[in-house]
Image (cartoon, rainbow, N blue to C red):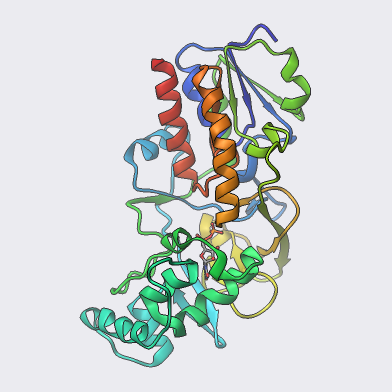
Length: 370
Ligand code: UDP
């Protein structure tokens, strides 16, 4: 174990990015991962029908940050896939997030771009919400009104988070844009696409460096006392590191169920959201994202769940407060120069892939200067 300058706990995107950045500066890095595979939650594999599946649910790469885009492009070529989602509402497949087409289709209107904000303003005026201390519900209703909130957001959010949307943070609403034009893409970011050989291959390329060694099926906790590295980069659950000293943070999980159908195409978009019907939140048809050809198709149904692997941080005040207590401890540890906490689980932040990479870049950049 003395062979290594740095130990990284977790071989997901945050761990692999950190490993690569440090290895390129000449540090010998050991990455320990409790799963039997690399890539963490972005792990993908090709099934017997030649279709690449995301084992832990769909991941679509998108970013505004050129530095992050340049970084991932060093390890994989990317397609120019632009993600589209339809929402199954009142028996119809409607473009989502809400844009001009959504309103015209749903309400049989013929709104021009300039009319959309007036229409939405009228919807908002008919609605009740709290503008001074907004919750998720208030934030959405203040943009699109209660009628659209009820059709697209309310039940989806209840399924996803298993709570009343009034108790969720307004920041969550910031993930979903509202557009007055016909842009039906899910993301507005300048750079979007899918790694052409998959995420596992991309992470594998990140780790392919002479200074990086990966140990799979190994718990960081079980070996931490034998380690004498200069730095530990921790990417696991924040509360677990501190042995739940202040209590447990809530991480939400998803049961991902795959089904293969004897047909070329299953649904009219790569992802269809089901806000109001069924117990699942959405169905993803992978070949529509990868462009793979097969006479069968494999899709995944997502059932949000209280237990299982930690996928999501919980965007509410209670967990935010608990996070702050843990983050004080983190600050102290990081000040010693011996620890960094990076990524969605360790920082307890609802990071998209690009923001996890950005965080690793920033934090490791600072550590290298210290
Ligand atoms: N959301 C919703 N209806 C939808 C899609 C999303 O109400 O059709 C809400 C829901 O609360 C969800 C949040 O917006 O958790 C963020 O959605 P996003 O698609 O970004 O979630 P992710 O892809 O990270 O699961």
